Amino acid sequence: MKTAIEIDIQTEGEMPREHYLNVKTGVKAWLLTMDHKRIGILYLWTILVFFLIASVAAAMMRIELLTPQGDFVTNETYNKLFTIHGVLMVWFFLIPSIPTVLGNFAIPMMIGARDVAFPKLNLLSWYIFVAGGALTLWAIIHGGVDTGWTFYTPYSTTYANSHVITMAAGVFVAGFSSIITGMNFMATIHKMRAAGLTWFRLPLFIWSMYATSVILVLATPVLAITLAVMCVERIWGVGIFDPKLGGDPILFQHMFWFYSHPAVYIMILPGMGVVSELITCFSRKQIFGYGFVAAASMAIAVLGFLVWGHHMFVSSQSVYAGMVFSILSFLVAIPSAIKVFNWTATLHKGSIHFATPMLYALGFIGLFTIGGMTGLFLATLAVDVHVHDSYFVIAHFHYIMVGGMVMAFMGGLHYWWPKITGRLYPEMAGKLAALTTFLGFNLTFFPQFILGYLGMPRRYHAYPPEFQMFNVLSTAGASILGIGYLLPLIYFLWSLKFGRVAGPNPWRATGLEWQTPSPPPKHNFEDKTPIVTEKPYSYSAKEDADLNLASI
Image: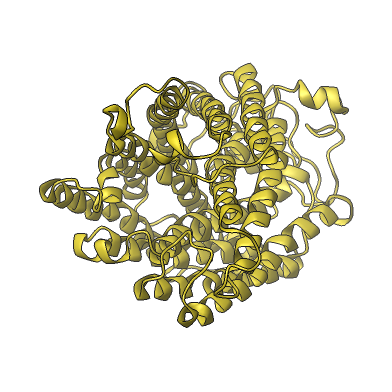
């Protein structure tokens, strides 16, 4: 993407004298900041804390599952561990990670804006997120919850331990952060685009974030209402979900999954946007079928609201309803397949550079494709009856959410890290981390497809001895995966002090964000207004020749 004016940027090899990181330093300045870039970094450190806690819970579960006997933790503790892992991973890492970190940092710069539409609300969303996380951590510290991340009734309203209300309140509060963020992004994209930046000149990351924002604003209130009603029944005994009180537990599932399946796309749509940016940059080609990729994002957002019933094939809903939801579930796979096809076509005959972000993007495509194909098995009524609530579901979900979303998040973080910090990380270490993560993930979760098909149910801390070999493979893979996640933390911190100065555009990428210094000034483009005159991703042979990734 080119502009009608040139933006002054720093000389290659030199850090800018003033940038958003060194203007008004100090704890108070950061805690009261309304700079979208700083708020993105605040979110980064916050979600990292939740990710580490959730990872420790997962590691303890994998240690337990090394042996068939439940000899490491009790069954009650195991139930609390998978609840901690699920709640923190879903609502405090997977859902907010790309929108709040990469979205907050990059969206205004990618559309030529000085900031988001509502900077004060942006900061408020972070404080609300922290408050929700604090309530959830309080519930964990004071005994935990054993319902699982789905809070299924009537167990959660009748038999579960007393901290259900506190943890549900934490998720309830965090939901308002999501709503505010989605609303802010929609207003920003609608009203603050640079002159000449029409809808079909927008980067595909912006399209994906807009589609995600629509889901955040429309779906999250349904979750809030569901959790609030659950707490009302638990506190006052109102018969809503408990059949003993005249309620219907299936109603809870309908309400919960009406939000939670669109939430899958809250997690994966931003990752798709990141991958679109990475594929076109590191293949030095315009994206194949730009209009189809953009439309596919919106189609996923719409169709995602219509498929919640495929989570309930064994819940006594009618066969006819099951058939409808099955057909719709196959239909929602089409726009996802369009994206994978277009990424592959973009790679065809491209000048591909296997930089670290590109390795993460390719890993995303591989893992997401496996996750999507196995999702078709779960959308088939007869197969789903066999593998429902088994490790097949665990494997499928993790291939989409963790294998896909986390690979995309790490790819985007590596891609924009030079812009965020002005420093380069060691490229060989980044490639090692990407490959380690990919191999470790497959060793962890692919055996679980086999476990699920053979009949091992999920959420059990003891199992028949014939399943041990596959569980040992999963635990070994988890240790490798942990190394893959730890490596970036080490070399990112190292790069803050010792990394080479990145310059304004080390990837020779198109896009307005790369026409600012690295790190950018406080108000991005300062007093100069970009004017967009071309479509996105206008790569050329000359730009390809100038790209020397071997020196990074």
